Amino acid sequence: MQSQEKDLSLVNNLSFSHDEIEVFRRQGFIKLKGFLSGHAIQSLKQVARSKVISARESKSAYGDSFSRLTYDLGTTDAVKNIYSSIAFRTALVTLIGHPLIMTESQSFELTPHKEGFAWHYDSLSFRYIRPQDAAFSVWIPLDPIDNSGQGGGMAYLAEDIYSAMANFQMASLLSRKMVAGVSVEDFSAHLRAVFQTPSLLTDLFEAYKTQDDFELGDVLLFTKSMWHRSEPLLPGPLATRLAVTMRFLDWRSRLDKTMFEGESESGGGVGMGVNWGRPTQTAYGSQFIDINDGEEIRTSTYCGPVI
Image (cartoon, rainbow, N blue to C red; front, side, top):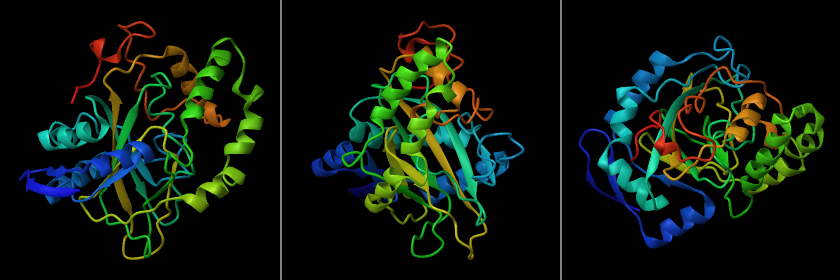
């Protein structure tokens, strides 16, 4: 991966070797070093700080995981200006191989007394599309990540080791039961024993995890089915660790109303045997009222921009 001429305002042009593209498509993640400029990081930090609110105040299920959060960044100029950049689009489309639909953007703030997310995949963020539809996240730390120091980053598992695609398929099957009137509690215990933290499975995740350090401007691109967790922020010079995430769909993605209902009822937990309750922090996916089940998201007037 080589950095070429810079977008003077926000995004740096990157080029990728054939091997780098193949490794990303096999493993499901890639660190993009120096992708965003200092100006982009400062713009994101400013808008994120102005938007984040207490996780408990938001009444989200993450009150014990993060100090502050927001799901309201997708319409801000700071985020729009980044994902609409030619350099941003070129990098993502080169790696992924097709255009994308921008959906939403969030920010999460960690403090030393918060653990962040346990092992999970992006079930809630992409609960309204079919299991086979690809989707991606761009994680942007707004503070340096030093795993030998305070931590505060992420741990993740390569998809060629273990993928959550089967969990999306399981969630689709179980969502059909839920729509038919079966409660998530009726079948959750066996799944929860497998996927809860700690468990035999998550112990294996810990043994095979990847962790990277991040300088300001480095970002992580990863698939919806990559297992990942937060790395706690340890006491030290950084009082908080702020990060922004942008979400994208394969532009051929189709609406899955049954999946949306099942995952919404469980807060994104049905494929892991968990019931976190209906989410209060985001309603994204509910706006596609002008298209039918199975139709392409991009045909809705409520679809986000295609990049």
